[in-house]
Amino acid sequence: MGLENTVERLSIDLSRTFAPIATHFRADPKRVSMTESYVIIGDGIAGSSAAETLREEAPDAEITVITDEGEALYNRILIKEFAKGKLPEAPISIHDEAWYDERDIDLQLNTLVTDIDPDGHTVSTHDGETIGYDKLLIATGGTPTQLPVDNSDADGIHHFWTFQDARNIREHIEKADSATIIGAGLLGIDLAAICGAQEVEANYLMRGECWWRYALTEEGAEIMHDAMRERGVTPVFGSGVDHFETDDDGHVVATVDPNGERYESDFVGIAIGLDFNLELLQDFEIEMDDGVVVDKYMRTSAEDIFAAGDLTRFDDVILGERAQNGSWGSAKEQGTIAAKNMVEAESEEFRWVSSYSITHFDFPFLSFGHPTIGDEYVSKKYSETEWRRVALKDGKVVGGVLIGDLAPQSTLKQLMREQVYVADNTEALLEESLSIDDFAAAHEQ
Image (cartoon, rainbow, N blue to C red; front, side):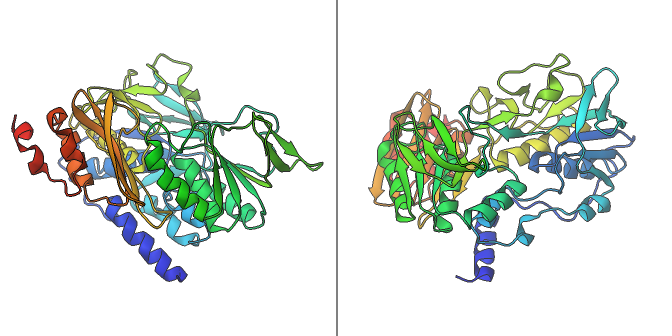
């Protein structure tokens, strides 16, 4: 397939999954009559969506976006396609600096915030600048978790989070002869797919007995395992990493697991989670709980400080409990909701059923909601490339995974969003043709 066709196909696929970010806006001057100052720390999808919404809702406000990255917003979903060698750099960028200039948003790249003073309503940067705010949004995301073993910082060992990470991975993998991947989750499988696309044989080390063991059964996971094997990636179960071996130049050459097995690896990819970037919040009182706690309006416990994106632990109004979600769509919506409530308090709550899709193989894969939680589940395999699992809690859908046939996702998301009680009709959740009408009686209650 030619490069132009690949770009066009990916653009079409993504347009079905993610709402596009507006390139034009029309502010309503009646919404905000007084000038306020808004500062956003972070220019990922949460921070950028917040900036866009703030400008729409508050046309005369001062808006500053501060990021320690050297480039404006790019598509984190597409950087894996770049690393696979399927895309050039150009389609990855979403906003250039001109986009911010056109909206009179002060974008400060390569700028590290060193201090937040909630009493004085200011933030300080590494170059000595102090910026005042009326409302502040924390959207700093996370940093890939480091593997706590010997030589985990050796040359040739990669984490996959930023566009620069993708550049480094692509440059290295194109020269590699062998690879090892660690991390049996949604980011780990991206690294495995990159090895497959670059035709580098890899071992994929997993602690459990299957990939993404908290969301899939072994039956469903085996579909993914077979797809990996077809691309030269070998799943290795009941494994992990004891240490890495390096050569005299400090470059990784092998991975040794806790069982003593040695795997040649001149390329290593690690994706074992995120450490949230919370350092700025350590010096003042703000509620934390494995992330920064926000309410349904994205407010933290600190006055005039909001948060959005990966680092939030939010009041999930659908689940009725605190939850976390690191998907692109969730972060985008959180940024939008935070901005609306920064302008007009308690104007809109965050209510969202997230989804995450994988397009690495000959069949589609989609997870939605919170597939790793729940007190029971139903699952069924329909063919060698088609499987479904729906997670339930208190008789209601809370998440699921679809492999092969994604048609049921709309109905399943609606059942979750509207909190329909389905415990009396769980077998209907596995019907090949699923309709909300199958749950009409429960839906009307």
